[in-house]
Length: 122
Image 1 (spheres, rainbow, N blue to C red):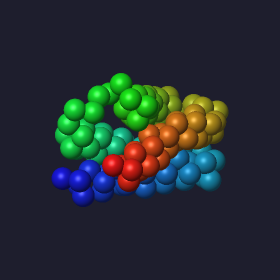
Image 2: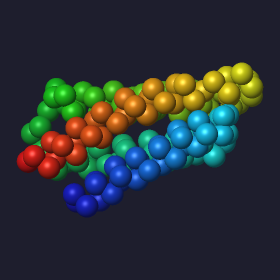
Image 3: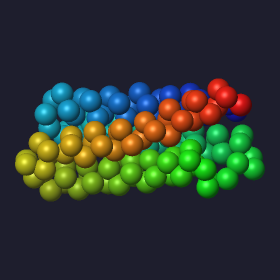
Image 4: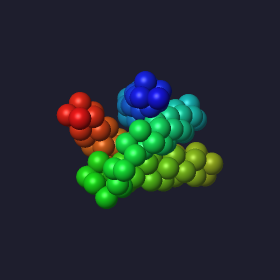
């Protein structure tokens, strides 16, 4: 199960990074960015659930657990807000959306990195 969890979380990193940096480099939120945001969210949630099963008694009340929960909630908010921005078709919001994306992506990296560090340590 560890290989599936690790693969899912790595795919989350790939999808989310492609979406965030693609949007930043293109200078405007597009539908394909939204698709990869949701793919990243699905992969991260799947990987997190699988890792939680493997961890067993490790509680949510740890640095990694709390930052991981925050990251998933922020990814969900980010994807939903991207959907709203695209549906409203507000050009200014589409052009400035990358600022939120970069913040969410940087926060998401915290549990990704801490999971890799803590995972290797145990």
